[in-house]
Amino acid sequence: MVNMSLKLLMLLAIFAVSQTAFALTKVTASVDANPVISNESIVLTVVADDSVERDSLDTTPLLKDFILARTEVSSQTSMVNFKTSRTTRWQIVLIPRQTGNLIIPALTIDDHHSKAINVQVIEQDSANSTQQQDIFITTELSANDVYVQQLLALTIKLHIGVQLQRGSLTEPNLTNATIEQIGKDIESEGIVNGKRYRIIERTYAITPEQSGKFTLDTPMFSGDVMVQSKRRSGFLSFGETKPVNISGDKLTLNVRPIPDSYPIDATSSWLPSELLTLHQEWQPVSSQGKNEFKVGEPITRTITLTAAGLGKAQLPKITMNAPNGLKIYPDQAELHSNLTKERLISQKRQNFAIVASRAGEYILPKITIAWWNTVTNKYQQAVLPAQTITVRANADLPQPPITNNPATTNTLSNSVSNNPLINNTADPLLTQPIVIEKTSYLQWLFLALWVLTAFAWATHVFYLKRNNSLNTDNVKHQKINNHYLALMAACKQNNAEQALSLILPWLNNLSSHHDNIEISTLAAALTHINNEAFTCAINDVQQHLYGKKSVESSWVGEDLLKAIQQVNAAGFEENTTSKFTLNPN
Image (cartoon, rainbow, N blue to C red):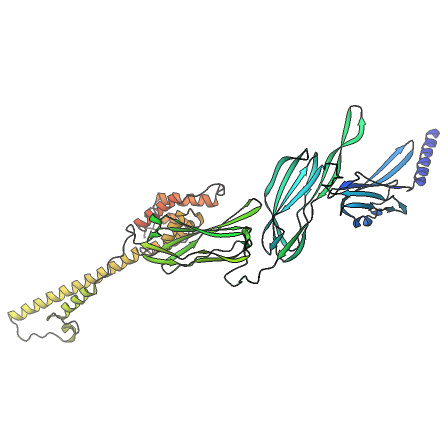
C-alpha cells in the first residue's frame, strides 16, 4: 500500500515538472505550393510548439500582397514516455493580389518569429506555367461599355479537375447595381489542355443603376478537395482534404449616363435596349384580314412587347384606351425571359377583352412606347397604329322593340280631338251637368251613342297605356347586360377568377327585371337558379380556384359559358322547391 502511494506521488511530480518545463520555443511557416498560378490559392501553415491562444498570431502583414480567404486553427497535445508536447496550428488560405515575386513576411507569436517566404506568382497562360490547375474560373461579360440601366450578362464557368469534397460559389459584386441569377446552373464536362474537367456554368443579369467607371468583382469559389496523403501503411493509402479558394478575374465596366437627346416626359421612360417591338393578335380571327365583329361577341386583343437587353421588371405597362361604346377588361400580364446567345430576351404579353354594347365603327388609339437603341445610339419609338374595328348587329341577341310611331300617336290624338262627341280639352261630363229638358227618342239615342263612344275611347286609352308599359318592360329586359357580356368574355379567355367575380353582378342585373331579388352569395345564387348545368359549372370553377390541384390543373370556361347562356335565355327563375312558408293559424 505504501509502495503504491509512493509511485503515485512520483508520477504526479514528474507530470508537474514536465508541465512547468514546457514553453514556446519555435514558430515555423510553410506553403503547400510554390510557384503558384494567379487567382489560385495557396495554404500557409504556421505551427507553434506550444498551446497558445487562437488570436496570438497577427495576420495583418499578409494583407499587403494577399487576400485572406479563410483561417482554421487547431491544437494538439500528446504524451510519450511521460513527456508532453503541445502544438498550435494555423492553416491560412491566401490568394495573391498580383503576379510576380511576393513575400510572405515573418510572423510573430510571443516574441518568436517565423522565416519569411518568397512566393512566385505567374499568369495562367504564361510560358513558365507548366502546372495544370485543378480548379479555375473563367468569366465572360456581354459588354464592357453600357448605358445606365442597360442589362448585361455575366457568364461564370467553374472548372473542377479533382474530386470535390464540398464547395460554394459567392455572388458577383458591383457598386450601385442590381444583380440576379438567370435560370439554373448548367453542368457539363470538357477537356482543357488535355485534362478533363467538370464544368459548372452560371449566368447573372447585371443592371447598373449609376453612371461611371466601376470594377466588377467576380465570384469566388471556396471548398475542400481530396488530395493524396503522404502517409502510407502497407497496401493502404489515406486521403486528406485540402482547402481551396479560387477567384475570377476582376472586370472593368464603363456605364454611360442617359443621353441629353433622349426626351424624358410623363409618358415615356428610359428603356435602353438592342431591339424593342410591339405585336398584336385578334381573337376571333376576322375574315379577309378585316377587324369585323358582332355585338356581344367577346373580342380579345393580345399585345406582345419584346425587348432585348431588358429584364422582366423593366418592361413598361401596356395601356389601351377605349372610345365610348366599348368596354375594356385587361388580364394580368404574362412575363417571360430567356437567355439566347448571351443576350437576355424579355417579353410581356397582355390580353385585353373588348365588349361592344352597340353596333358601329370604333377607333382604338395608337399605342406608343419610347426606347433608346443601344446599337445605333438613337431615340426610337415602337408604335401600334390606331385600329378601326367594325361591330355589326348580332342576330343571335334579342333586338329592342320598335318604339311607338309619333305620327300614329298624333293621328290618334287628332282623331280623338276631332270627334264631335268627345272634347279632349274639356270633358262635358266634368265641366257641366247634362240636363235633359225634354225626353224624346232622339235624346235617348244620342245619350246612348255618347256613352258607347266614351266607353270605347276609355278602353282604347287603357290598352294603349298597358301596351306601352309592357313594351317598356321588354326594352329593359332585352337591354344588353354589360355584366353578361363581360362574363362571356371571361369564359372565352378561360379566366376563372374574373368569371367567378362577374357571376353575382350578372345575376343581380338579370333578377332586377323580374322579382328584383338581391343575391349576395354564390350559395344563394345556386339556391335561386334551378339549373343543374349551372350548379356543376360553378362547382368546377370553385374547385379549380380553391381546391388542392388548382395550381397543376387548367380551367376551361366552355361549360360555364353554355350554362350562363341557358340561364340568360330562360330568364331568372326562382327555385320554388327550395322555399317553404309557415301555415297561418
